[in-house]
Image 1 (cartoon, rainbow, N blue to C red):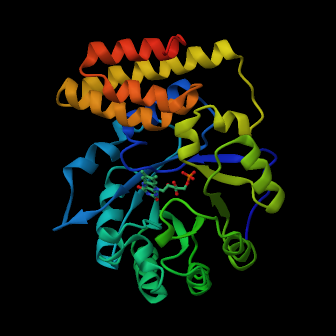
Image 2 (image 1 turned 30 degrees about the vertical axis):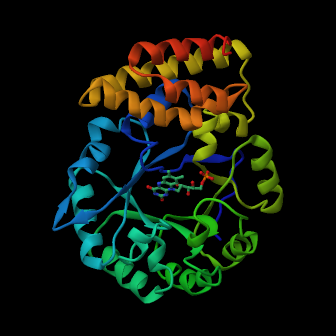
Length: 320
Ligand SMILES: Cc1cc2nc3c(=O)[nH]c(=O)nc-3n(C[C@H](O)[C@H](O)[C@H](O)COP(=O)(O)O)c2cc1C
């Protein structure tokens, strides 16, 4: 592993399709600091076209943060080059290849974690990429599709190419997003991988971060997803910064207000904006004492006025 040990941890925001969209990423960066790079959830190609729904995610105007890395799902060298070219035309200089998506709809089409049992396919994609583009490339991967031994065949392939880094979520795809982290797979990568290695998976608190740091002292690059959605202060806490209760509340109120305003602007109608906000609360409710109760109140709210009433009750602690 080629990890220049950083004096401070480096913290990336994980891509979460449907959650860390362009609205979330931009407003998060505006209200909170301490994320060092934002990863855009995957885009893919169908019939030689990038789907409309992905376009606004990658438009540079929607991604003003300093370091934003788009991610691609590709089943072949042809798809990889199509997407690389598309993103390069938009002005991106670095992209990320998804070798981790666990959903059968994706893996059965030979994409995401579906590529892990086929190191020769990964090799063909990477060879075509580095032969035909000047972009930088990182990889985000699982330990395997069904078995954590798959990584042992994949790492030698990754070592053949000048990747900028490898982000490893040490679970196998069939676990989806739960079950034990396979520490031995991460351990293997720390010794066998030539590239910088980024840890991802269940970093939900500063304590989680310290525990992982103790286990893997050479790792100073982290990626967090659900933990940030549940607690937007997590990257700051990992970097040992603290906020008073008043500051926290003010920032949460501000963030929520901006999210609602922006979804009302960018969604087709207020109903869709409200649905996006209800989805946002699936994780955001964890900022409050009784998360389940909060979420229930939000989900039950019918229309914007009821929603605002529920939000006010939650923020001002009058939930009954
Ligand atoms: C709803 C959801 C959507 C996700 N979308 C993506 C995605 O588009 N690309 C990707 O590489 N990983 C995706 N992931 C995986 C996360 O990036 C991350 O690897 C995983 O959640 C583990 O990290 P965490 O425990 O910090 O959340 C997604 C996960 C969830 C729960």
